[in-house]
Image (cartoon, rainbow, N blue to C red; front, side, top):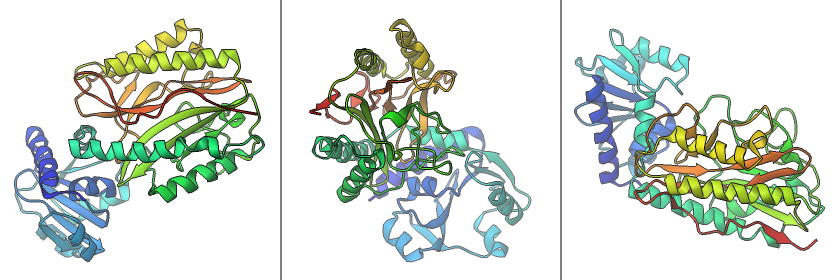
Length: 390
């Protein structure tokens, strides 16, 4: 549960940013943003003035919000006629997260607060959330441990002849029993994911998902993840799952092979490990995110796998790592065009992967914390390919 001290520190950091930008208050509407500051995911909104105490207005459940949150001022959601009375007259410039708040909601609050101006504070909130406290890092570590425990058990249930969806069901059953919360939240519009990926031959299919691997999925309505394809001997099986415990995420991938692996795939996997280690060593405060991606892409090209690095040729993802926390697609992104420096405490999933037509998907993924000594790994699960007898 979020402590009062942790909540206050987050509020104070946002207030400092608001004052620097001349914004009088933040009006947080997205549930996960409200949760970050309050520790409760109820149907509520949160007003954080640049100076003064925050106010949470709750539609449902007021009793649970009061029981879960350290915020002192928690009130029932008022009518639209009374809404303006919550805002003092000096709160003229109001910040909203335009990246995620629907236009309909923006329109409602514009009407409810006449005479106020509204500005976008999306990057302000996302940048604040990107730097994790020790409290948050420990929660990520716990999520990584929960996910690693299930991945370590895969040799006990992966069999040739089972379908990808059967393998996914076994993974998801065990994750759920371990306490996985099910929600894999994403902020980006038009992106969605269910637990993760369990793919073999289906992994070489293209798709909408903004990542190196999409999977065939079960239909054109759900074109992502496991399919009904049968897992065969001598082909790589990618398990790329998100652990979600206590709201926080850890993202990991491992490769399993029943039988033997094609030498070209083994070569690509060894290169993925080298890229991961290069990125890990460089994950220090001040290092530019874009440079890590460009260095990774250069290593892939020099290794002979540039055309299939981070996806199918022509459909390659333009990143090698992404921030994780309460959402799967947090800042920072180790991506082309993201020319900003890393900060200590940022949590990043590094995922060098290759999609080789006719042979399969290969690669690695682990979650790290940016430190002065480089990336601190969140799980000690071995990276090596797990070979099973055919």
